[in-house]
Length: 550
Image 1 (tube, rainbow, N blue to C red):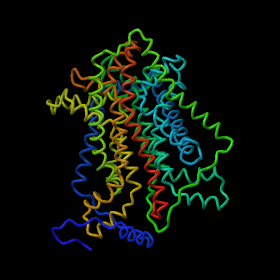
Image 2 (image 1 turned 120 degrees about the vertical axis):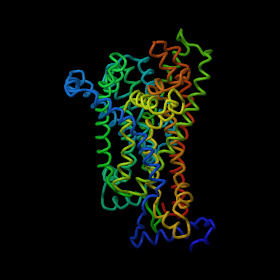
Image 3 (image 1 turned 30 degrees about the vertical axis):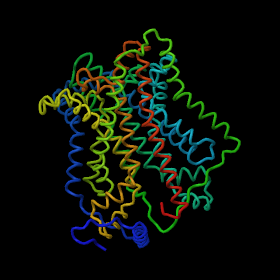
Image 4 (image 1 turned 90 degrees about the vertical axis):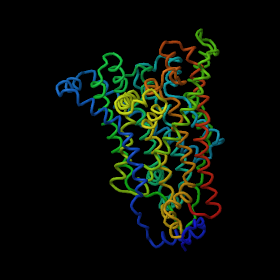
């Protein structure tokens, strides 16, 4: 029943909304989505156009090279080495991150592991340790990881596997156990059931996390530079620093974009067009936890050993340098200023980037089509570009188009938005995928406008996911290095830039306080990410116990 003209309709009654949703699902009807609102479409286009500025800069700069010069660069043995190192690091790092993330998510969410909440926090904690700080800690402990492929794969995987673990453990907590019961009734064993039933059901979460890991590996600089493992990204920085050859460097960046497009194609092909939200008359049941039995002690030992690798090694190295390093000093007045600047930029970057990702993800999920898919895919190429390329693009555009933006904090925050928009988009989209669109349709039949239905029905469902997106981007902003070095106004320094200035000068003792402060500052966002996953799982289980549909 619609509301009288000029009167804001009351919120739809949940019971009536769910009854209508169940009726629609039972009859096999699905409401057709209207064309996207013009304002939403305009916002999405504006966001994507902004994120494509660095790619346009790369294409323009590369076009300044002649074909002969470009061919000469691409056929050099050095380029072949960089291409090989980047390719195998991408394969090894993503594969190991997926194995670690999915394996530990299953152990925490689907077994009777003791103190699973504590281990969940421990497994999330590496997000608070930046990859370059992790590399610094490992190099301080042993030089065996330097100039080593397996050392590079190990360190980047220990740094980035939580990007797979977090969405996977949340997806496992929301998964209805009925599909596993059906498989068991057909004689399918637990391993086969996981591979054939559970893994396909949680594949969007796994694929989204794997995509983020791959994009981060393409743009990783600090850790790989410390490890002396050359990739296309370190080669780009070498071109700028040694020969000041901008076109040659952007040609290498264009190769990274090709890698990014390949990752996006593989992820889209694996994801398919399946809808994963569920509204039905039945009541879902949380899965029974598998008993570890005699192997419980062994798995606890494995988790403890893994915690030593991810947290013990870098933290021990930092504390050792802090206490024993002759160059260490906590009286540096710049430490407090760097903490304040880092915190402010992290909050601003996290909020703005998540807000920018919302219209893009909404179009991709609620208004599926070729154009909305193209828009969503358009935010990812910039994430494959090193921060210095994004920064140079913004510097060039600001000087020639908007000179007032040059050397300002707003330009730095825009750089963060471009760099980390894919991270926010993946998080927002995965959250929207699990909010049934039929609830919006039912709300409109009860008198709500489309905008009102989105505000009153969908947004409350996705708020935890939005909070997780803000935390995830804020972590990335706090630890960003190369773009900050170039875009930050004169006299502005962050914990990451101060750490890098001292670590690159082999002043490990002086660098340690900044690294520890960066880790401490990242703890709240890491805790929030872990807490959101737990709340999702608990609220899902409560809905089962109260007889509400998943």
